[in-house]
Amino acid sequence: MLLMPRKVKHRKWHKGRSRKRDLETRGTKVSFGEFGLQALGRSWLSSKQIEAGRRAVTHYLKREGRVWIRVFPDKPVTQKAAEVGMGGGKGAVDHYVFPVKPGRIIFEIGGVSEEKARGALDRAKHKMPFKTKFVCRD
Image (cartoon, rainbow, N blue to C red; front, top):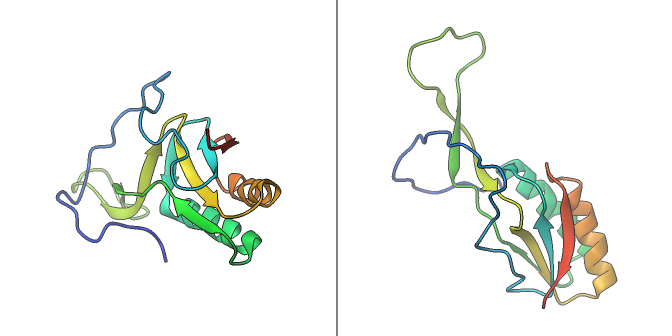
């Protein structure tokens, strides 16, 4: 079950540019659960990576507690077919990503002990393409 939008206003987007030293301003606090996984780096987080992290967390927790995914991949990434020459327009939409900036909370967990949450989020951090840290609710 990969995450992707049901309906979009524009099928293909511009790539956009990452801005260095640009920190996240939204989604930086643990809001729903007691513990969270916070991004320390910047990257595009694909729907496959989000799903792999979610599966690692839920498998470790064995159906106890609650898991929240705080990001949703809505940015389309296009890809032209292999061995196709230049020209001929932009490629078809291949997958969806979420552009992550440092400070964004990716996953949240509630209803379990801190050791159990640390273990689960430690499994998820290995699926992420950037460094992360374990954070607790203030």
